[in-house]
Image (cartoon, rainbow over all chains, first blue to last red; front, side):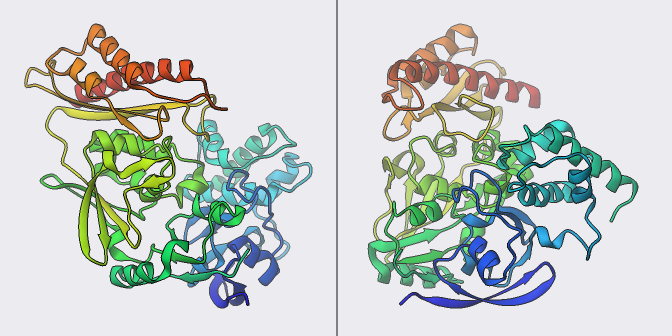
Length: 161
Length: 292
């Protein structure tokens, strides 16, 4: 008999109660219990950042958080970036700059980049590269991702949302 | 994967009660950046995971000029890195903590977890050793103190007994004209595990030149970190010019007892233990001179 529990968390501003096996990661809970499949499973070892979410104000790899730890937490996933069909400036910039190819890493990059810009609206190239060093992309070579973050940062400084 | 119990006790006593009752299949969860991977891969057989992050004593982060730094075992590396007194007084410890993993890992990984994981390549253990940190350990029979140099007892092994929990580190206040530094070598800029590492803490005399006290520890070059007394002796009583730094480096190389593995050869690690010792000592010296 596997042991289960109810986990109460505020996900993208909405209070939810999720039935979770104790062995589940937050990543599993988001995808399988909450149905939020924007957060991707990559390496499951905290190396690739595809599962990045913000939990209680901190950027974390959701594969390295137990679902049970999310009790009472506030979580933002990639689904929390857009408002309805109105994409976040970062999402628009990733499209405009073609900062993605296969797209598996993209939700993690978006969430991580938003966490950066929320703290630092005008990061240097160095700061962007270091902040995003825990997000791996095997397609783009990172240059376009860097340019998209810079473009979104400039846009948000002019017109914060 | 077998069924898992999960508890998040709010008090130290509750946690110690759980630890005493759950046996050797207990996994103590701080940031989980090692434990969750070990659990998932089956590398560790865990039947009960105890999340210690809700316990106030394990979240202490406090500095007092008379008593020094208190660092709770569950404090995340990024919180230590953002703590101004730690940056100012223990820059080598902050360097070690901030080298661990990416932004995402920094949000979760703790210094306590880093040393309890027991890796000889852990980035915080050498700084803790040279700062003469005391590891405060609690069990059901009370509290005991373990010097940082005695905490790791072998690869993946620590001085913690069954039912004991690492509560906090107590690090003495820095003497006047002192500083520390930590360096590791990895084949790229970030996100890797040390091939070799060195931490140095030094204190200068009133003249601002002569070294009155030195502590030097090297990591990833033996089954446990090594406190190199010969390297410290090469600096103490001397001005920290090239000859003294070279001698300290040679002593560290002589003390290194590494193995050859995927990260480096014996010869390379022995050499790097010396290079890193020399450079870390120079960094610590510069820090003292800059703060004058």
